[in-house]
Length: 124
Image (cartoon, rainbow, N blue to C red; front, side, top):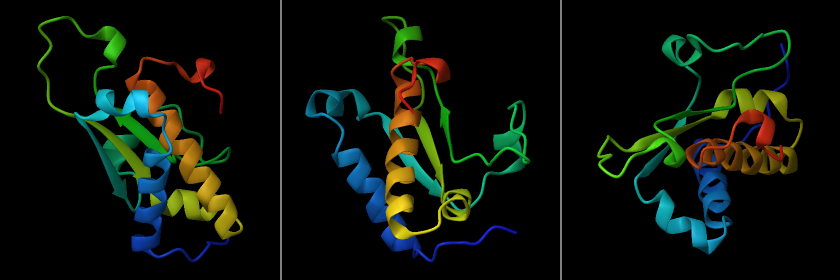
């Protein structure tokens, strides 16, 4: 089993909040109806239908919702959710600096899905 960096849940939450605060100010209003949730591990239903090979890595985050680019004028759905998985991130990192960077990249990646970007279009 991979080693696990010791970052408390409260410190991890702070890292996620900092990553969100680092997003350019012009994007902040478009995130008002997005709930960012920290989970310890992905659930079976989170993994269902995804092409995640445990040999190649773990699921670090997940976007649930309808991207802004796919919404019509009458859209009034539930808030979108961005899930950030603490356990997998801690297992894939070897120190606190790597955790900070991985949290930042994962948050940006999942928020990118909210804005309609595909994995291939992401900078990470």
